[in-house]
Amino acid sequence: MNLRTENIEAFLRVVELGSVSGAARHLNTSKSVVSKRLTDLEREMDARLLYRSTRMVQPTEVGRLFYDDARVAMHCLQQAAESAGQQAQGLRGELRVVAPSSLGALWLSDLAAEFAQKNAQIDLVFDLDDTVSDLDAKRYDLGIFVGRLRDSSFVARRLATSRRLLCCSPSHASKIRAPQSLDDLRRQASLASDRDRAAHGWMPDEDGSSSPMPGLPPRGRFRTNHEASLRGAIVQGLGLAVLPLYLVATDLQEGRLVEIRSETPPAADQIYAMYMRGASTSPKLKAFVAHLQRALEVPPWERPEGRYEVAASAANAASLVPA
Image (tube, rainbow, N blue to C red):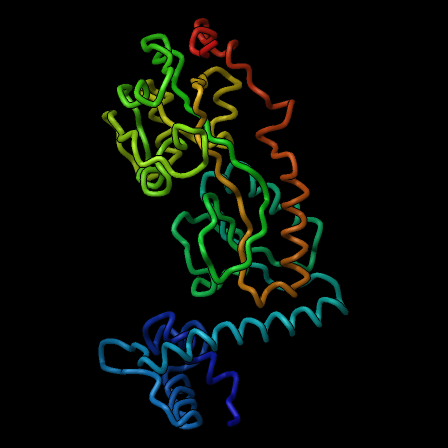
């Protein structure tokens, strides 16, 4: 069987984009050329790969199985070609990266720009998106993820630990009793983003382990689907929330927020760089991951020059920290 790579590429793009016209635009060619490539591929394989109608295109069962294997194989082939070229000519070509919006905008975009500045032949695409789960379908080489690692077909490289803190405004802190237990927290005006509730709740178990805590339902008057909006709500005094330190470090340092400490601290997240297994040979990807690992060995939001003082951020802050 002699399969042509351009036919396989056309098939992959049709499945991902859901139409022949979309694939034609992506490949910068005509619909008739894409249709012919699909027909040739099905003839070469002697198998029907797609159901096609005037309104939609979707893979058959055989087509779905072929898609899953073919996209990995094509990615490996592309990375092998790039790797060979880069070994001879240095780091070059396009590198597409996606990162969570808050972490990316506050801390990682500068690191990405620094990498691009040092590697003049790299065209770096650095997107911010909290919803991407399938890197290959979105044509990303690398994704930055924050959370607990789940079973995945991707390779994960840990970049840093992301501590999470229970915070509120100084004005709200002056009105409440410092929580001594999880039961105390359940009675407070607690806020949580939809992502936080879905991902792991507020706190670890009573014994201090890092497993998810399904309790602590939000009791406040403000709901949002994004942690940055949640930060804004607690700055305005609407309640308590658990937020990543990278999001609130400046607020804590400048006194807009205070940390509420309890005997059971919030569970930390991990920050990972994730990519497809076939991409592990890509020199430009390996170099970018190494760049992030060096920069985040001591995360900038954790460094001494940016360290906040809880007791100094509000007149009564010391009373909020249980002895």
